[in-house]
Image (cartoon, one colour):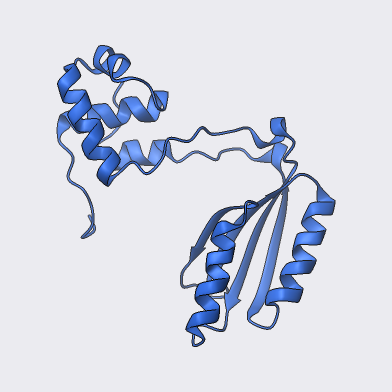
Length: 170
């Protein structure tokens, strides 16, 4: 496990599994499911919200709310030597409401990946045109994968978290 990994007690794992299963439910519900006391649940919630849980967000079926196009965009950012530009650009990406995932890393072709959602193909075309115009000088090896949101098979990371913290608990 990595340097920043939080060591969880068995009770914390039980609590976290209940949250992964039900979302942001009350401590009372978690107490009933896990057998933990109300005070233990409250203490564990405070600890995990301060260290591990950043938000409680639902997993939305994008297609059902009118998001029909999902884009995977990869590119190689070539302006890392311009720290101010890089910081501003990636800050803009983070604030962009269409961007739902953003990461930079190392790879054989591209170092940055973005998952972007759109209502329709017109929104996708406009976005990509503006992206190329605004960042084309610094974003090289631009690759796109266009997916209809109705064809997204899985967009949930709770199972991998359950595995990492010690397996599924029913």
